[in-house]
Length: 129
Image (cartoon, rainbow, N blue to C red):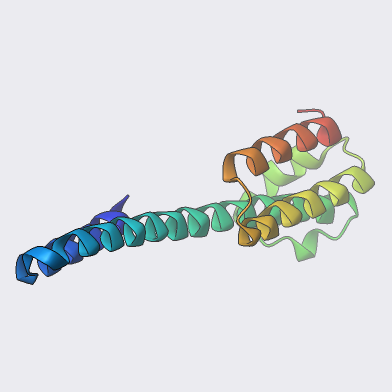
């Protein structure tokens, strides 16, 4: 929303300087630019969140396979090991790939909500909620 608001402020400044005939075009272009900026910011935030999910699952896999020294989130080692306890490494590896695929699909302009819902269902199926 903040990204869109910044674009809106720039558009409003341009509108103050524009002539009557130019205002409609500038308003339309400003609305389009705002939507693009909001989508770009939302996609970046989702990308970051999915990277964190992917990294957490990867750390779980490290704990499962006995490669604890490769865990990135060392400050959360206890939580990671609890999450990993009793999990199947093959399923967790598949979950890492699902999170990665969901993150990469955002670049293809897929519906974000649908992609995240599909990921949630697949992860719940793989990891038992």
